[in-house]
Image (cartoon, rainbow, N blue to C red; front, side, top):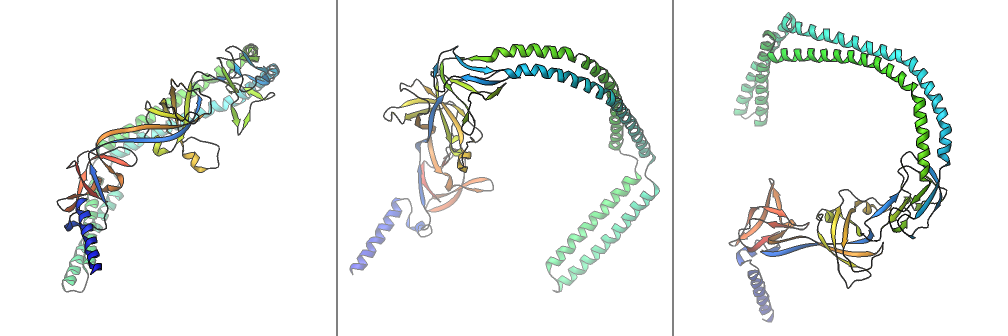
Length: 468
């Protein structure tokens, strides 16, 4: 008796729970294996969190001019604070002096190139002449093809088209008779509908073959179509243009040969100019700090950095002066996070050294490609760069300080449902909507809110239930 009372009490609790959740007794039996999701109009915020470290937002690079070359003789220690205009590096440019000796070799090389040019230029002119002759022959061929077009088709082509039409008509008639035979056999139950369908397809194919053969015969007997004439004229115009171009190329090659010879004669003056240019480049033997800041040695490859005795060249950044009056937060986040962050968003920042204080920062850059790092972990290759500009922080900042960052990427009011509730049917978004004690598939319009939720734009009610 006691066991029966417990059973009825548990059954009563189950029915009451289903009723309070919006599931009545009629739908509970059919939906007992489904999970309910209760929705209603609410205000929702989407927040992403990630880590970053402090870096300089203003770093001045030091390098020498293009085409310059040298070797580090002395440089200031890394991490030292320097003033604007202070000497930071000395470069030995003995290579520039040696380069002057190489100009003599270049003069000899120029003379050698001139001799080679005099040997090769007749062959180049002859090649251009052969190309012109070829294009002229192609023009005559196109003109002959147009005359053949107006002459009409030959008798053997007409006979072949007539023969193809007769063969197609015979095959079409045979296919029709074969279809009728299979239909009668099927009516008596000695064949399958699939076999009759096959014969019907073959019959239609033969009929199409007859139509094709008729059109082919009409095409053979008819005069050239206007589009064929236009096409032939166009080919003649193209061939005429190619003849004109080949003639211009022949003339251009002759003029180019003359200009090249004159160019070699002025090479000596060019060498003198290069000598004067090298003299100007020697002024970069001493480099000065472009602004006040901290000296940093950039990493060249691996953990190797610049050192005395190392060679430097134009465009190669061998030293940086990092300004101390502008800082940024450099971060690497997953693709799902970077796709939600927009430039200009405000972030809440908490530095590890001052966890009780909060700073503000603004997103200044969001990378579209993964941030490459020298690591054996494959997941590192899937991180996307994000940079934030720190705004008026009262906390003393140092390069390398780590911080936790929080950004509100979206905020809205409405009905929000998980993406897992939505099924795509014929390119439409569908959900299982509970209405009047039954479940019905409902087409809905949505807009993306974050990686987990979407906003339902046209809910029939402000509060209700959905099924997974």
